[in-house]
Length: 92
Image (cartoon, rainbow, N blue to C red):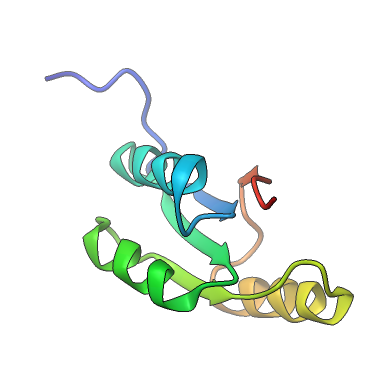
């Protein structure tokens, strides 16, 4: 099988990643070689997804309805993974 897209060396942040479209998008990005940062309110579901993904996914349980939580997320991402190359803003 030949990959049409490679995202090796890229980092993708996916919000709403615990289920549905967000989880499917995270799986596709990881399969294309991206390091995935998973963000959602439900940390347990994120951890389950992360365990199934290739690479070294990061998990952040956060309620993005809170400015303080967003500030914390940005600071943690910058510290642990640098600036993401791709953003998938899927949080409902």
